[in-house]
Each structure stands twice: as structure tokens, then as C-alpha cells.
Image (cartoon, rainbow over all chains, first blue to last red; front, side, top):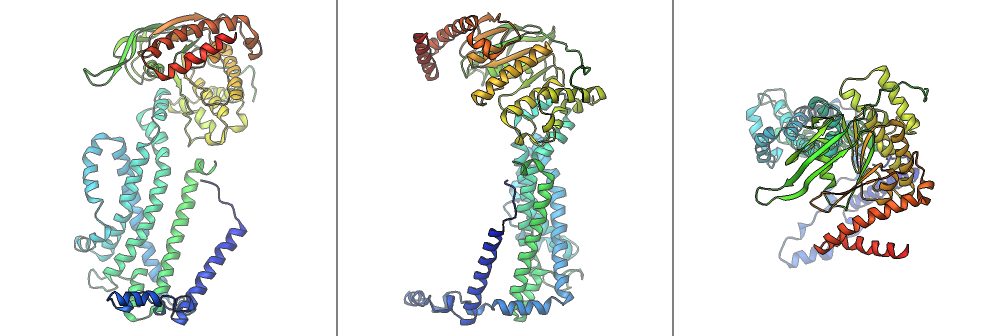
Length: 289
Length: 290
């Protein structure tokens, strides 16, 4: 990992690309045509000739313009409900993610260091792993007493598998010579675990966590959309950025849909960045190449 | 910190006796013998160099000496005590750096004493002494990836020496270093050896390295490995590269060793080894020149 230094030129480049993106979006949305002209009309004709409806292409005119989105955002930014959605989603992600770390790291390490545990635990783990976390939504609503817990559980699953797989892989790929050297120098088993296996697995834990964090956001938003904002089950659940988007869709406020989408983008970015910083802090030997 | 006159633990040099050791791998009936009927001793306080063609089973022999694996037959004893597992008394320096990447130089060096709960003022002082000895006092807070190849090797020497092993086992430790650094490390390492009087067992494929370092040179046969010959290298110590390069005696020993290695290579060449073919060709050209 190369150390990232502040580079004014790359910052400028980044800002420019975002600006160009926004301008194209604005033009497309206002003119109702991509790039301000109907450049897809031949394609539409072609689709028509093939016997499909001509409207089978996505229509940018349906997407609210960035200026409208900004306007809508200015409206909700003073609304405590909007910030409550942030708070809800963030606390769910944090709960699910923390639980995934607390359970996943020890579980992964156990599978990696103990052959019996691996033999017993891994087949079950591998059988459950291909089930997408969202497929668990109905079951977990039934299974958990409150809606809040069921969302947190699905969020937990999102990060859990990735963290475990990374921990097992990381711990198993530690150079055997490190163990031999440590053993020769008189390390006990506990000492080898604490000073070789744990730090040796740390880079993989960091990678697994950041991937897991991404999945956590995907899952929490979908779970919020499905579970809705109602208080029909348990009476405590609902809300969150996912519900904010869904609610905006149901209410026909297309600007707010985009506001919600961008909010999730920002929230995900903040979480990843926090995790990256933390990761660098706990693995100082990796950034000093 | 004072560098001279630092009280150091007394070096207790051990002696390893290997008798009738064989090692085979694979399932019963399909076994491949890597080490066959090896008997030799690693003499107390001496630097014994084991040289042999690459892939001849030297590393296997090292794993047996270190106690990472047990021999199929035969016994290995350190000062009369049978070897049953890894121990601080027989420390191995591996081919490439096995420094723990997540620890600074200082933490790496102190690994052994901390693992055994033996950190005392005397040990810390010894650590300082070793840091100075290997010229890494300014790099104590650096991680292994921040050190050069030569520095890594020196840090590893210090990490082994702080445990005061009775025998130090080095498995081609300077392989992969560039020629200049390698020669520097020879002088460095032989200086450390001369000062400590510890028993050292050094494995290499490099004949110049072997002649420069050895008190005794063990020449191994091709796989399954056996001791082919033992040469006494009676060059005066302390040794300097400049002296050894022009020494007739050194050249004589080298040619003697090469001719034995040549015989071995011819044998495996006739058995179809491609690596041996390279050696045979190189040897023929070399002897034709001198």
C-alpha cells in the first residue's frame, strides 16, 4: 500500500469529473434527451422494428435534475426526520457490523487454528454462506421478537460471511517459518496465537471488514425497504435511509429518492473511510513500504 | 549505551551428534528417501559448513536438526540429550527473512526472551549490545520491510543470538543478496562467530562462501543425501576477504572441494539430472582456465 499524499492536481481532476457528470445529468434531465439531443432514436427505431415497444430504453427525462435534487435536499436537511433516518441506518449498520466482527473474528480464528473445529464448523458455514442475506428477511422477521432485531440480524449476516472467510484465509496463509521460528524461541501456544496468528491475520481482518462494511450498507437499505416504516410488528421498527427512499417513491417525490441515494453514498463513504483509517492505524507495518 | 564491556551471558557452545539418520517421505511402499544413513558431528565451538548440490536434501536435514521433524531412523543428540522438538538451543536462520513483519526490529530481537518471560535488565542490556553489534541501533523502531536485505539478515542474527543458543543453524542465509552485500555479510558474520565462539552450522551451495567461513566443510552427495567428505579448512582467523582471495591454501581447498562436488555432479548427471549438467560444464571450463 503506497502512502497517499495530498495531490492538488488529482483533487482538481476529481472535482472536474464530478462537475462534468452533474452538467451532463442536468442537460439530459432538462432537455429530456441524453446529451441534449435524441441520440438514441436510431436505436429506438431498431427496437421498434424488432417488434418491441419503443419505450424499452431508459428515459433520462424521468430523472430529476441535480438542481432540483439540491433544492429538495435543502428542504429535508432541516427536517429532523431526515436526520433520524441517518441515525437509524447508521445504528443498524453499526450494530450488525460490530456483531459480525465480534462473532466472526473469533469464529474464523477458531476454524483456522483448530482442525476439529474446522471439520465440524466449516461445512455448515459453507452451506449457509451462499444464501443471500436478503433471503433471510422473512425468516428473521418471524424469528426475532422485534423488527429492529430482525433488520440488525440480516445486516449482521451481510458482514459475517465475508469476515469469517477472510479471517480463515488470512490465518491459514501465515508463513510456516514464523511458527517454526516462534516455536524454536520458546513460545507457548497462547503466545504464538497472540503474537503470531493475531497480528498475522490482522491485514485480512481489515480487508474482510471493509468489504463486509460495503455489504452491510447494501443489506440494511434493502431490509429497510422491505420492512417498511410501519409499527405493525413490535412497534419499534421502521425508518432509516432505505425507508426514506421507498417512502419518497411511494409519495412520488422523485427528487427525494435521489437525495436518499446520494445520502447512502455519502454514509457508505464515511464508514469505509473511517474503517480504512482505523485499519491503517492497527497495521502500521503495511503502510511503511 | 556502552558497547564494550557489557556483561553478556556466557556462551555455552553445544555439540550435535548425528548417527545413522535417514528420512523418507511418502506413503508406505512409495517412499522417497531424502536423507540416507547420515552420521556426522557438529563440533563444539566450530563453524561447520555443509555444502552440496541444490535439492540434495540439505533443508530436510536442517528441519531434523531443528526438531521440526523427526528422523525415520537414527538419532540426533545435543550434548548427549536426544533431540525431540524445537528448542531455543538449536535456532534456525531461514533462507529468506523470517522476521515477523508486524514487529519492529527491537521487538523482533526481544521476541525470544519475551516469549519465555525472561526479560531482565541484563537481557535488555544484551539487546542493546546486539543492536550495536549488528549496526541497527538507529533502525530499532523500523519494521522489517523498511530494512535492506542485508539489514534484515543482521537483525535476524541478533534475534537468534539473544537467545544464546548452544548451536546456531543457518540455512543458506545469504541467498538472494547481491554479490557485494553477500561478501560484506561474510566478513560480518565470521566476525560475529570469531567473537562469540559459539557452535555454528551453516548450509550453503556457494563454494566461495563455504571456503571463507568454514572451520570444517562437509560435502554432501546428491539425493538421497549422505556425507561425501569432510575437509578441514585450516585458514587463519580472523579472516578478511582480501586475504582469502589471494590465499593459495584457500584456492587449494576450493579446488579439492570442487573436484569432489564434480564427481557427485557427474554421478547425478549420468542419472539424468539437468542441474548437474550445468555444474559439470562450469567445472570443466573453470579447471581448463587455471
